[in-house]
Image (cartoon, rainbow, N blue to C red; front, side, top):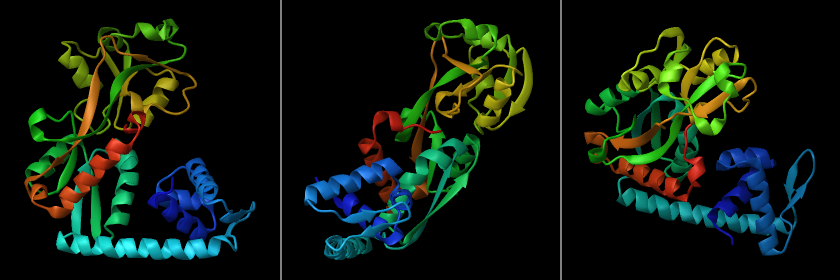
Length: 302
């Protein structure tokens, strides 16, 4: 089945001459873009692009299709512009605050799609700790903010979540147990510890204290999750990190679920100003639609 994303991708490939660059513009992986183009060609029953190692070019049969696609998308954009004008969404600026892991990974593709939909709205992203984001929301300094573990009464749009995991060096005595068994906070707290905060007040130390425990030996305190993982790999200690922050390369590392498990959630909250802003509400609705359309496993921060 053909949809607008297929036609937008076709135009992007034609303009860039490269499927990888077109995929980046469309917020897709290279393989997903290649598959989409193949499905489009199969549905139409013709070859739209001639592919070589150096370049992708529109075929003679594809040229008139490309012209119609451009015209269709231009008419659609014109219709949307009229709708945006009527809703006060043609021009404006939004201020969005978040802690680092979400603003650098989860939000960019969603914001890219929103700005394609509303090119006249500028989205300014501000990075801060979760405490700073809460202060910005309270002061009306931002329209929208991503907060950790939002309370039910805040009407937050849940963007994702993950579990906290114990991270130990591959040579550590704890690494020899079965993954399914898990590790308790008491076991972690008794080990030399690499404390990573991730720019958030909810971190290894706060979780241990909530359990009525204390970290016996904090060797290093870092803000970045990646730094903590690197130090654990070097055998300097154990750590407690969100599952989504684990590196792709787990060589020299073992990770275990906590026993009992602990999860965290992050949600989008409007400030008082954001609640009355048509642009802020449009962004919130756009993100809600993106979350509904995404596979559950993809709605996490890295």
